[in-house]
Image (cartoon, rainbow, N blue to C red; front, side, top):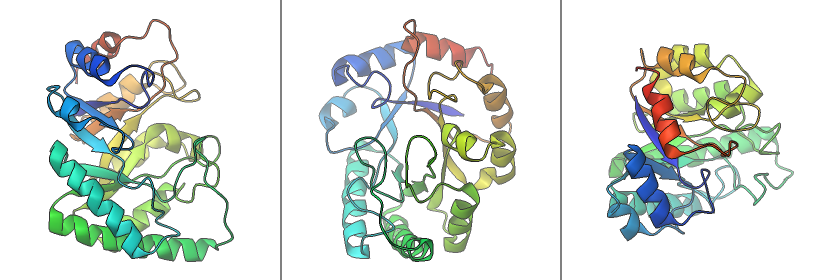
Length: 256
């Protein structure tokens, strides 16, 4: 298993250069982020860190917009990924507002699902041609992302299976899915072949993996038996004593 840090959630107020230096000094090799448009590519490329994942659609909605708009943004995001030598980009069903919510609309769930399927299938065709992995992420709609459409793992799984491409998998965010459904470890064990990326943050405060109701040492230890992909730490720092070194040492203590 490989580990990555989300630079947009962990200490978002720190400058990029300082943050990259600290992450590398702590022993990490990979970073991830949300929107690529506000990032200094030259700084990232020269940091010695590699980019494992970033958001591929921040301005186009998979459930509302036409294929042309979606594909235009996906292509632009793949262009960015190629520059960064990143192998995957993450997709969301909706456009998130500043507070994480989604603007309400009057479309039926059936129409949203059909539009999502068509746009996702079109995006996968592009990904296939350009040889890059797409990972689509279900989020929780109960706490952080009100009105977010794709908030159910099994519906996401059905989408993945119906499109049936090696270039499309699920980004399984343990925090979001624990809030929506629970049973996260068994779900990951049963469907790990459809999982292309995992996000880590503890419940209920979306904080460090050791601060919450989930035993992440046990979860990651069990996962390591069947999953060799990325686990990205996408949490918000809650402890004043947190350092990148403390997180790195915590990972080492699991003895994966």
